[in-house]
Length: 169
Image (cartoon, rainbow, N blue to C red; front, side):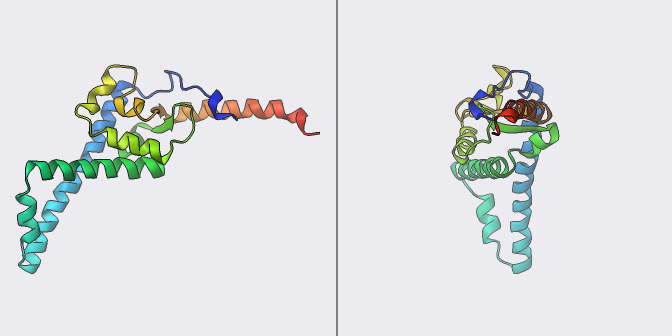
């Protein structure tokens, strides 16, 4: 199938409510990571008697906190979407990330999506249009309902195969 023929229509896009669920569900592992890290540093200090990591962690500046937080957010989204085209939130709502032409997103697109999440208020940008946020438009990707997407894509593949049956001579 020629990838440029496939069109992502509005009925395939994840809804605004699904996108909001993504935001909430994906925040949980992010907060959990930092919570666990804090206790890990504390118990490491309890075990060794050296609290240097715990003291540093509790005394970081706002700038250091932002840098560490954004680095983790970019890493979380990049790794999850690069290898599975999903995050925990998308897994929960049965949606995936695809390129706007219906193909698998490239590493560059996933990196652009991940970095775009550092834009202030990006998390709420999907409220303006039908299920598309700034991190979607800037990376030429979109989030689609997985079952509908694959059903339509498989139907197009089947139609294309029908057209090729008589061309095997």
